[in-house]
Length: 87
Image (cartoon, rainbow, N blue to C red; front, top):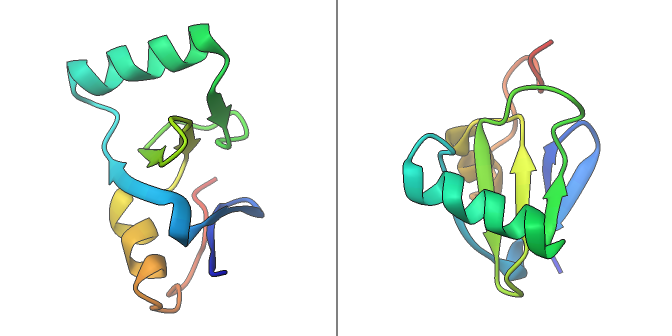
């Protein structure tokens, strides 16, 4: 089982990850709000701005403070260059 660091020590299973999307569009904002109401939203931003929404295969949504590009790079096995998280 491969785990991906999504920032600040939080990890998700790569095998359960369906998509990594930007939180800016209205449909994703609706999905996030519905997940919050249903109790299936996991906020891993640690109080920072949400830059990526991870859609899992069990209908859970995970919020991350890292960009989708950084998460995709980690999924492909690239090493992070420089700072991991933005302050």
